[in-house]
Length: 382
Image 1: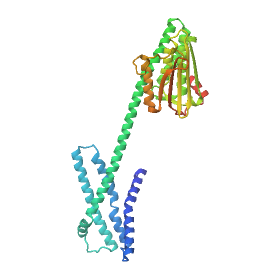
Image 2 (image 1 turned 60 degrees about the vertical axis):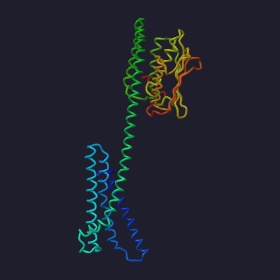
Image 3 (image 1 turned 60 degrees about the horizontal axis):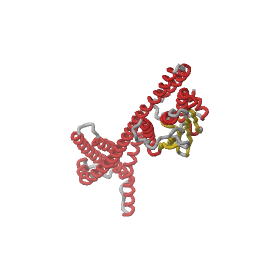
Image 4 (image 1 turned 90 degrees about the horizontal axis):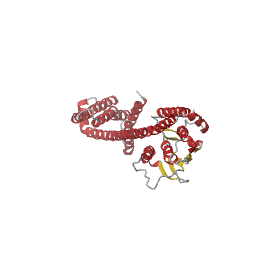
């Protein structure tokens, strides 16, 4: 018997022993108040046990029949006829055992005359006990129905929660899958440009960097969240590739603290913002521009910023428009909403230098696997 079944067994014994204790206490108290002779203790205990403990094996049967009533294993009519028949057989068997056991106890203790037969005792109990047993049986059925309803309600909530989680994961992976080819194509375009210009050494360096990016994407393709240290390491590699193409036109800085780098963030969270800043803030100007990535903890939140000093968003920009720029940023907004709900926010607007500032605030969740900042940088860069 497993510990769980053993616990249930002892609970059943306790439940059906309680009316024995209460009945004995009431009988003894009544005898004291009336001043008469009370029933011998041996018969009082034996009769009470014979009356109540027969419910111990009957209770699991009643619970099983109740669960069978609500199951879908067999056709409804056939199942319910079988359950009703099972209840009738159970209460009939229980009553027969009660009538026999109370007679045996009475004969043993001498409280019942040996001349009283089982049939005589049975007839008497039909009048005095059967209706009482039916009410108790209905009470047990009600408890079983309540517990079964609570179990089915809990299971339904659990299944709904699991389905919702699976749906959100599927949507998250879909959004992430849309994101990955975008920057990979950008990297390939950079390689193609270097080859056409016969910058072979730089092309080789970019191919190596591209291989590291691709390895990261493949290794983390099934991962929904990573440490910010890993996310920043990926951004550094990508910026290194772009720096080969743009040269001094790209001036990038990353400003974080160790506590921020130890936070968990959705995989490829910063990448669309970095790409957006490069494409619309740096590349469009002959002189290039500056790009800043910053991260810090603000109490229970993690604040992430990506800022450029480019021409800005424009008066008509909206996250809900259907331009390529709007689609990428809307994808990011949807991922944050899926991941964090109302506790995560994404805002984009004018920066302090006239460019564009994107700000993400999400709940701070520490990744215990991340080493201190210096070690994390080495691990990411290695």
